Length: 136
Ligand code: SF4
Ligand code: SF4
Image (tube, rainbow, N blue to C red; front, side, top):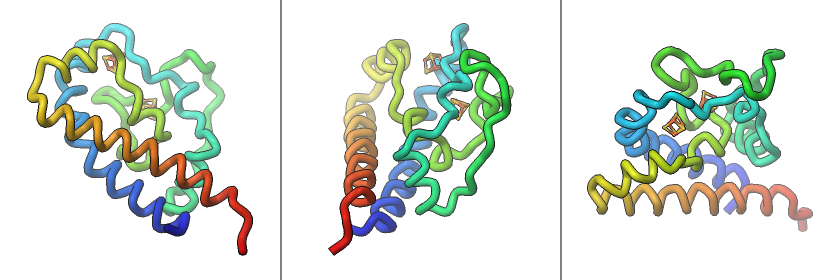
């Protein structure tokens, strides 16, 4: 698969993951007193930059708030960015409370989400590999 095709698949699976994850975050994060969305998480890593470029997501600039301050994209109702445009870590991070909510809910749904997260991790790994590998 070419890097472009991997990025396209990654975008599609992030879009698919979003409502599944939001079923949990809607319950758990709304009551959270220590929201994990810090500015440091908005800083894109190499894999984010590669994915964003290939998926046609415009680069964003970071404002100059401290790394432990609330993320610049955090709004009153949660993240203001569509999931497929966020750094990947924002999707695959699950705190203990979120995992507990998954544990207590529908197990079929939880298993599907775990599969999706694994696919996202694998696609991002392949994206780096394919982009780093020298051409023929
Ligand atoms: S993921 Fe966990 S730590 Fe982050 S806002 Fe939700 S409940 Fe809070
Ligand atoms: S989910 Fe959104 S608000 Fe939270 S750290 Fe990521 S980009 Fe920022």
